[in-house]
Image (cartoon, rainbow, N blue to C red):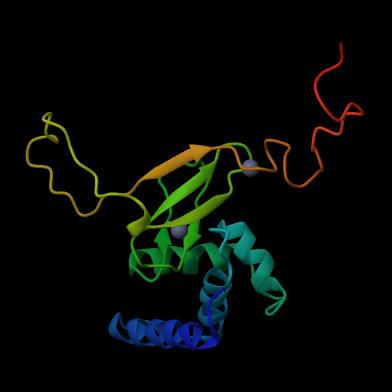
Length: 165
Ligand SMILES: [Zn+2]
Ligand SMILES: [Zn+2]
């Protein structure tokens, strides 16, 4: 969760960048942006719509899509990954990696400093390719998809020590 100071700073930054882009900073846009900011779940536009509807009941999914697209075009929001099937968004513009559950599609942030800098092998990148940044995706299954954690699966056998004979 963001501290309220960090949250205010992000909203202030958004206001400034809207101005730079010649975009009106409307209440609607602020509410949409805040919905992404407040979610650490890397929400889909549909998730955002559900959030925003609580504050602006008259808003349509189409309007949310349109604004999300504008935010992406202007770099106010970031698309998490191009290959997850559905569009996932985040407002966290600090470079970081992702841990992705292939079961429930949950995406967790992983600080960039938690991963050693990537070393590319001898086989170079395609000729003329300019790297902007390296992002690592760690794919696997989260605890609840593996059936552990949430439900007590703590090998509750009657025999306390050793297996049955
Ligand atoms: Zn999962
Ligand atoms: Zn992220």
